[in-house]
Each structure stands twice: as structure tokens, then as C-alpha cells.
Length: 381
Ligand SMILES: Cc1cc2nc3c(=O)[nH]c(=O)nc-3n(C[C@H](O)[C@H](O)[C@H](O)COP(=O)(O)OP(=O)(O)OC[C@H]3O[C@@H](n4cnc5c(N)ncnc54)[C@H](O)[C@@H]3O)c2cc1C
Image (cartoon, rainbow, N blue to C red):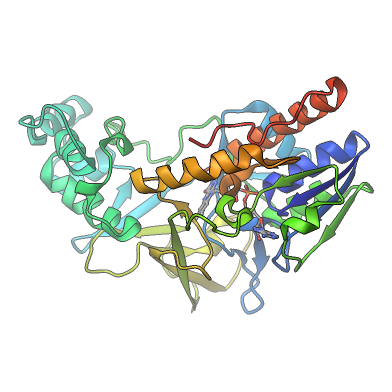
């Protein structure tokens, strides 16, 4: 079959590869001048540092098939994400752990003592937390909430934490030991030569043709037997019902001779600092050595029509609009919506790959059995 994939990010590349291996003719278009989507990495011309162009990406997963899949295309170097935060003129370790608590309260508590102490700080008058702020106050109390959650959340989402759902903080966001590894997953690492090389290798198959700097329009899909679309769901329908809300990011690049901050990611929890974090890219490749350094200050704001959509907002208003677009998508023939933009969800890379592998299997089965391929393999609502 002749199949068109919109987007040469992880979703498009993984689906394209699987279907090409099954003998289909694959064309992939992407409006950008590079493959890799938002995972794109490139060497900084001035410093030689591998830069995560659309923000820091750390690969972490418990999914062994996905881990084996990425390792079959690229060597992964061991990498542990250890995040710091600057607040109240001090540098603390994140996620909040025993070191953070002892430093913050100037104590030397053991795990059990710290647990009891945090329980005393928690606002137990809140029995049924109605929003993010109440949930945080109930878990950790006002001091830690204000130093580590409040300002960061306001800057990241542009709304008061009282307007965000309590469910964002599902469990106690504190560790009563000195484990500062940000992710719990079994497998964690960084592609030795960047994500873009890995994705180029996934795309390197005689059955795949990639056309960059090519913006998809619906007519473009007509000659094809099927379209997989990893662009914005509302964009497919020319924003006919309005725009799904996103947050976008601005990155302010600067260079430094030497080591600017000693770690890859430094958060800034206070509202008075306009950016949310500074990323120093050379620390994502600790096996490389560079004299110069390139850093990004990261600012978050509401996404306008010409901006890159980063984080879906998915509040009540957006979900109502999403339901409209889902209904429209379900009647559109021969198109399947995939990936973070096609399904309007935040997806980590491992989840993106898992869904792409499963979508490919569903498609190949549908070809065999004559079943209709659904508009969504994972429901966006
Ligand atoms: C700031 C940030 C940090 C992240 N950090 C991590 C992390 O540390 N670990 C992790 O696992 N995940 C992380 N992620 C998630 C990761 O970026 C996604 O899992 C991944 O990018 C999803 O791939 P995708 O192919 O679905 O979408 P994308 O990468 O967005 O690819 C979609 C592609 O479609 C193209 N496109 C869109 N519309 C059109 C059109 N009309 N015509 C042609 N082309 C079009 C776009 O140019 C893009 O290249 C992060 C995400 C963000 C926003």
C-alpha cells in the first residue's frame, strides 16, 4: 500500500519503519527542515556541544521492548537525571528528598524523623483537597509548597495553582532517603550521538522517502491508501472549531567559557525569576568533553497561532473542544491520528514509541483481516 505519514518525529519514524519492513511504500512529510520532531538534537556550531533544540530530553522507561528497540538503532550511554533547584538563595536537590528537607529546615533528621516532621508541617485541616494548591499543602505544608511548587507551577502553567486539578499531585512528592534520581524507571540513558541520529537510522530504509520542509494539507493525503497524522489534531481540520490550548516555550541561548552551573538542569522555583529553568546541554553528554558551554534559559507562556505547541493544557474548556475534534476525526476516512499532537496528550518518548509500535501492529492486522483502521488507536479523551 502507499502510505503517507505526517511528521518525522518518533511517531512517524517508528510507524514508517514498521510498515516499510512489512513491504509498504512510505512517504513521510515534515514542515521542518530536520527529522526528529521535538526530540531533535544538533551540535552547536560555536561550542561543539550536542544541544536538545526543543528542550531537554532524557530517555527513561520500564518497557523492555521499547528499550531494546531504541538500543537497536543507537548506542545509549548511562545517564541519570539529577535536577537541582535554586530557591531562597540556596541550591537544593530535587525531587524533594531527605537532603532537601534537612537542608531546608537546617536539621539532621533520619528518615523516620523526617517523615514525622513533614506530617506535622502538612495542613491536616484540608480533608478533601479541591485543587493543586490544597493537595500540596496537605502533603507537605506551606513552607515546602511555597519554596518548591508554587512559583514554578505559576510560571509553567500561567495560572494560579488553585485553578489546577488536585490530581496533578497524585501522591506524596517527597522521598525520605537520599535518592535524587529523578526517574524511577529501570532503563535510563542518553543516545550517544543524539536523538536525531537515532531517528535518521530508524528512517533509513529503502521503502521510506522523507520530504522535509513540506507542510501537509488534506488534499495531499488523497492519492494515498492511508494517512498517519502526527501533527496537531485541530490543525488537520484547519482549526475550524477553534484552537486547542497549549503552552509554548521560549529558549534564550547563551554561552559560557567553562562550566556554568555544574549540572544539566537547574530549576528556578521563585515567581520573581521570570524563567522556569536553565539547561546546560553539555552535561547531557558527560562522556564528551567541551571547553565552551551552551545554555538555554527556558520561559513558558500561552501558545499563539505561530508558536510551537509544547504542553497540552487539557482543562475543562479544552476537553470540550477536544471532544468536538475527536468526533470529527472519527468520521474522517483513511486517517489515523497519532503521537503527542495528533492525540493532544503529553507523551514521554517511551510511551510514544510503545504506541507507535502498537499502532503499526493494529494496522498490519487490519490489512490482513480487512478490518477498518480506527481514527485513534489510543482514545485522546
Ligand atoms: C519540553 C519538553 C521536554 C520533554 N522531555 C522529555 C523527556 O525528558 N523524556 C521523554 O521521554 N519525553 C520528553 N518529552 C516528550 C517528547 O518530546 C515526545 O514524546 C515526542 O516528541 C513525541 O513525538 P511525536 O512524533 O509524537 O511528536 P513530535 O516530536 O512533535 O513530531 C511531530 C512532527 O510533525 C511535524 N508536523 C506537525 N504538523 C505538520 C504539518 N501540518 N505538516 C508537516 N509536518 C507537520 C512537526 O514538525 C514535528 O516534526 C518532552 C516534551 C517536551 C515538550
